[in-house]
Image 1 (spheres, rainbow, N blue to C red):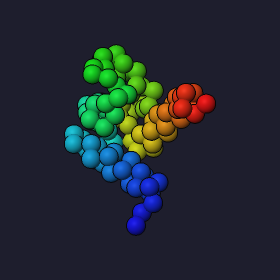
Image 2 (cartoon, one colour):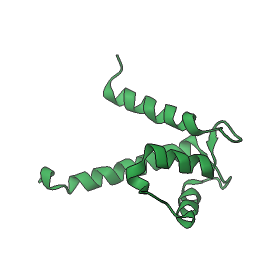
Image 3 (tube, rainbow, N blue to C red):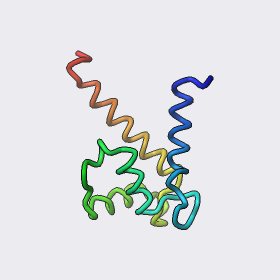
Amino acid sequence: MASPLEQALLVMVSTFHKYSGREGDKLKLNKGEMKELLYKELPSFVGEKMDEEGMKRLMSGLDDNSDQEVDFKEYAIFLAIVTVMCNDFFQGSPERS
């Protein structure tokens, strides 16, 4: 049986592939696919509505190779950043004091 960390890695990979390639390249997320992934899989992080300018800034920040899409490496870096932010948030939590 897979450990919790192994299961988390599987979820990370399978979630990317669940949304990638619905339109175009099967190994990348375009803006629409990324937006859908964020709203469905990370609703607490995007809130009820992310404005178009915010989505453009996010895609631009993630799109290291400037191809207007997010590949798996760029997605993994995004998840690492979100994970660090969560860790920082919970480090300051009153329960941790």
